Length: 533
Image 1 (cartoon, one colour):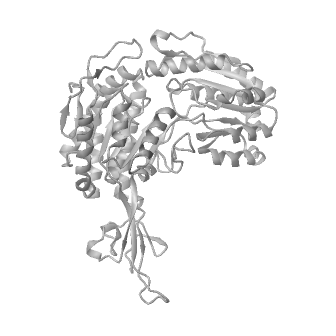
Image 2: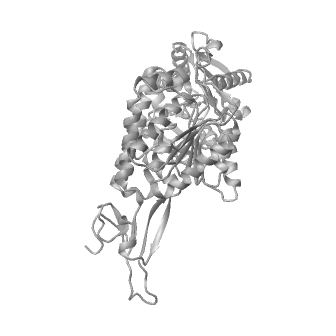
């Protein structure tokens, strides 16, 4: 069992220069956990970033097989932490054991998925346009391109996923996969979990012969640490999961640098659900049950939590609200991730409760205990005029809080869909005939959301090749990119083009004989064959 030391992990060195310290706390009890963690200093941040810059060429020039084995070794070392990792995550986040075990499986599974991805090779988007020296009026040169890593990546872990979107989450794993060193800012709400994961990665790096600086991790509660990482000249890109306020501040800092860098922030959204008439008539009770389950998954602490539900004002919708209220009463309050999130949730509930034209439709049957940072389920109800009077309802409240909006006509669906900010998801419950009837609504939501869900719920994201977890601002900074699924590797690469280069000096993926047998675009056609073969 590893003994935590609370220091920065700067390459292979543990460092604790800073006088400022902090401790994590058990959210259920408020009790401080024993390890004292040191706030990173400017010099420690500089050493971590400089080491990453120094490691970049050595790491990116490792073979694909070496990087794939490193990812697999990281997964093995995380699993080898065993019960210690699970117990620490539970103590720092109040997540139950099954949730932590599931998250660990997701984290290790996605690392192995990226190992398979880079071995397969098509993610490089290798393209070859062969020369045509006799072309008139001008000859055509030989032009070839593929994706190359951008450099050191700064990663900010999420508070709500201490294992799967954190030190060993999709952000660092995808950066490692394409050849980028990583510097992680550990989340101050679960620094012990972060240290265990960070030390597992360093063990894997040593076993696999990776250059020192391929991974570092620093601690910090202050904004200065995060800003120092993003502003450091060695940073080539950064990835963040968290609040709009925090993400926007870091995005602005990344954009204001003398040399701006891409900053990929996933900042949550209201994730609307539209219940169309056919589905409401056929299975309104089942939809109510699924909605309440989705709303309360993880104590409502998902960026895909459904915050608004729209339905046509009718007897079936009234029955749906009644069923929703009954299901909400069965939900027992549970402890949130930390006191800060709980305080924001309480303020959000109080603000909604005070609004005119809103009615509390249902809530947990058992009172929440503030001393244990517990959140109860709340479902509010309003009509179209109520939403028009309170556009702030379009804003996310992080926790198990949602509002059902009764709309007089399909035109109201379209009006409110147009007013939605960019969202990670939008869900529609209906029949195929409903979709045809409400085609205009679908067309609007295609512009508003990154993932459209039919007869399902936004929580419970499948980690797979086709997944897109992103959306128009303010859901994310760049709607093209995803933070979950194998396409998230696209954030940390850039195309490099080679014109008229000799075969011996080309990357092997661009050589005529295609020694790796990867899928390439050759003179406009997809093939795994050799050029001219």
